[in-house]
Image 1 (cartoon, rainbow, N blue to C red):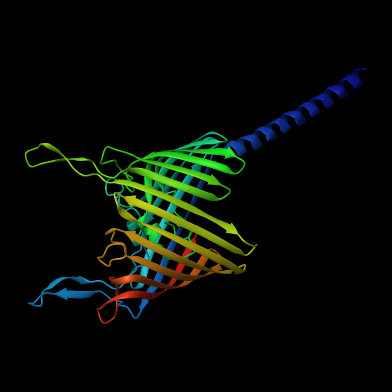
Image 2 (cartoon, one colour):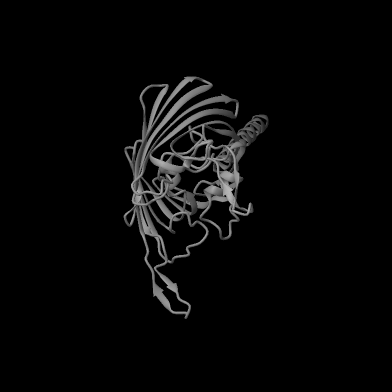
Length: 381
């Protein structure tokens, strides 16, 4: 009996050890799954750009005595980014993130010409390098809160060249908001429906609220299609005169409605769509663009952006100096992938309703159209 008892005791010890080991391994697996995840990513881009028949260099502007008084700039479309002649730089984009089970943050920094243009409304505190900086809380599986500076939810295109198919940007994206600072709430409504509500500073004031009033934002989404809204005053409404008295000033109210979406028409063919309308007390714009994109192989795709952009009043985006000008811009882009590097040759034609000094010919005359070629390289990591 003693021998049998000892044998059972040993068996029980072995069984207990196996159970404890299994419990430890299981707990470690759960701990690993719940452990917050740190991520680091970004991109670097550079390009070559030339106007076909347009001015491609900066010319010193002289007065009657031959003294330099300014610079005559080369021809460019009235859009953001990728407008410099010759070999030029885009930006370095560094994105750090920390994702926990419930909470996390994103710190998105930009360096270089494209980055400086993207954060133009943030002169206080960021030294023009903070593209996004926000924290978030997943309150539940269907409710998320975000606080800080985040890129706009309007429009088809984004600031990062790695996330756009076309390298140059559209008029609608260039003249809409780039970023917002505020608090937003995202809702998963189920059955592919989503919604978002936000309270924000005036558009592109991402470091501080200098005006003391706020802009409201909203979004309704269904299966990859989004209807976006923003509305709010874009000024202080008051000023101080030379005697120190507070006086009333005019404050414009910005309203914009925007539709962004797209459809996979086949396994290799995608059609993106963007339409927008912006009114700032009678001055603004409306436009629409189609983005057909064809994946011809695993390493190459070709895409077209066809955009119509109409100014309201003396908005000034096209540069004609006239009211209610319009422009049609057609951009053909190829995208060749070599590992993490994308090579993007691009041909763009802008055709305006009136002559504009944005489209300067090599003879220094205003023109209604401008053709340009770019070759861009975008490395993502």
